[in-house]
Amino acid sequence: MELTKLIKERRSVHQFEDKPVSVELISELLDTAVWVPNHRMTQPWRFVIIQGEGRRKLADIVREFRAAKESDPAKALEIGQKLYDKFMSVPMFLAVILQVNDNPAIAEEDYASASCLIHNFGLLAWEQGIGMVWETYPLLQLASFREAFGVKSDERIIGSLHVGYPGKVPAPQQRIPASERLTVME
View 1 (tube, rainbow, N blue to C red):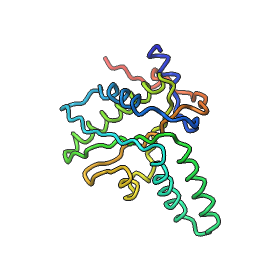
View 2: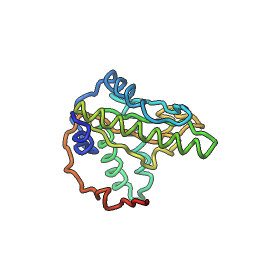
View 3: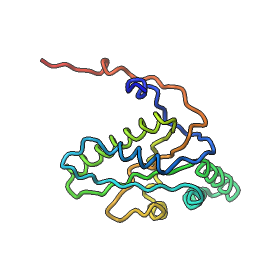
View 4: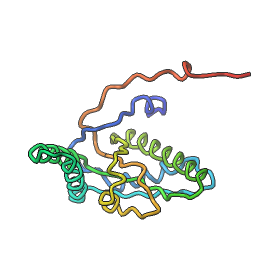
């Protein structure tokens, strides 16, 4: 697929087919996605995939987390189950985990580089007919969620990527042309 077309047609997918995604394919895509600018070549990332029955642990954490915020037990059960079902409908979770650097300048460069990696991965996946959405919900800070992904104390999850074959592709949303926000100084 032509790069311009690929960039413009890629969508964040929230609904997936009930179809597994090949770990081998995802690994290949990640091997390509890591070819991003990375000042100082720190390459501070690692990845964890949770799929199949492993998703139940995440879904249970989400159900308990959300239900605990609700005072009405019936509503807590209903909302918790809805989120449980939503998490179980995601074929694969791919956590992008970043080694935290104590130097603020390097930490910022590392985050920017890892963000580029996630974008590369999203484009590569889309080219293969695989959709994803990059989630950064509060759960990423929750000890039980971090533990489920094996995150160490000096690491952070910068994205929980929900990955699968699209069940529904959202319509495009308008973008403001860069030319409307461009300043040229001579």
